[in-house]
Image (cartoon, rainbow, N blue to C red; front, side):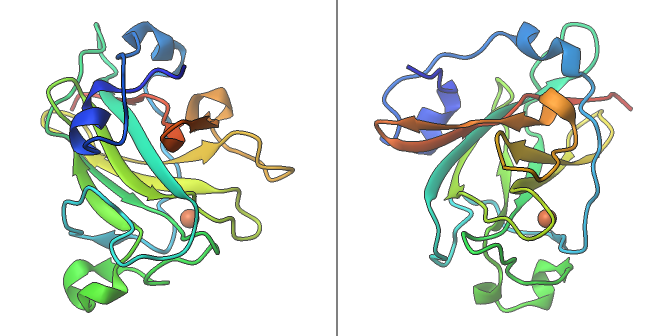
Length: 196
Ligand SMILES: [Fe+2]
């Protein structure tokens, strides 16, 4: 039985049946979280969502959950972190296949993108799709995280076992997809932010 983040049950109401917060010690070897390229497809100011797949793109439904923690001292949870996530649909396409700001586009053009907030335990969860790969990149989730008293972080998280495509970040920034009775789950590696 995989361990679910407690907050996932609150945000993805009724989708997950049970949960247990993982101990912070699990991520200590991977702190602080390494930065990764922003890439050419960042769109700023995306709305807060509980489902990144805002307009029903095709792909395998997925629940994405994780935690935002401080890289300092006791690795305390960071509440109210703004977690901007963007990714491809199941076919490996971004929407839009471009960058800019949310206001530059019609709402219908913005998909598989959004902002999620962490709760008092540093936890977040959002519905989405399994991202498709686009050569030569392995499947990945783009993250930009901003939080009170901490330095902003731009990074990427990967899915374990993506063939021969290289996965930056070693063991610290990838996790396996888990098949649960409620569907596919990606329990993201903990993200540790450096204080300003
Ligand atoms: Fe990308």
